[in-house]
Length: 297
Ligand code: B12
Image (cartoon, rainbow, N blue to C red; front, side, top):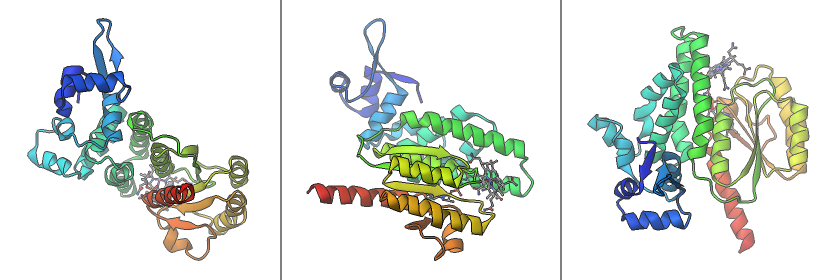
């Protein structure tokens, strides 16, 4: 994948005339930079945002990366899981730019951000965790991979098309003591791309501080991640007596997610939704948008 395209190259890639590309650039539909000689240059970041915003299918962009026919066939059918081994390898090498490039390649075949993370990023992380659990990977290797993924995710966000602000806001956070924050980073990435204002608090937020933050920001949604709940009593107390009341006070919906959370805590937590898949945030987003359009009708 090239780092930037000329007007001619972009026109070929998107199967349109050069004049169409120039018109898009001049009317601001696609960002470009002008070279010293006055020529338009389209950085890959702008090209991706444009493709993503317009839900275009441009198989040539991702397929050119792979010689193998079976990989090409999978990608053009939208199955990004074929990239999992390469992403895992890049992460284990600490090569965050390669991780980012693979996410970018995946995005072209799978423009749905949540599906992209669920099908490409998470399986690689689960494999890495299994390696650590069965002793084939040491902690240093796991940490290097995690850092590479987090840096790649951070930069990748600038390549995702962001919809116009929709007036909704969310607080996303890990529960006290929780350090696994990649799931909420992905939720934040998705909601931001859908036009939400997101307050991403990250790892290990003291429950009292989180409750105060919710009261101060008055979000529409509170999304909390809890993967490794050791002290169940403290967790249930914190959610039921601090987080949910704070969210209710400001009219926010609360979703608590994490591996095994619904099975383990069903009937014991007073939050609105228990989940073990970030895809549930898509359904919640759609409900909010439907509600908004019902009110404006
Ligand atoms: C990277 C990693 C770490 C990194 C985390 C860095 C970071 N910034 O995130 C570090 C090294 C810090 C770490 C620490 C530990 N880890 Co760790 N870690 C992992 C690893 C390899 C990947 C985690 C990850 O990001 N997975 C991908 C994400 C997306 O998966 P996920 O968080 O589970 O999210 C899915 C669902 O749970 C759900 N979800 C999660 N949160 C939310 C929130 C909402 C709102 C919703 C809707 C959904 C949702 O959606 C996702 C799927 O769509 C996993 C392996 C694995 N199987 O995941 C182990 C793993 C999670 N870790 C594990 C353990 C045991 C630990 C430690 C206790 C190790 C130790 N002895 O110190 C500590 C825990 C410290 C703590 N209290 O938090 C175990 C957990 C077992 C368990 N459930 O009890 C795992 C499964 C490894 C294993 N196979 O044993 N870890």
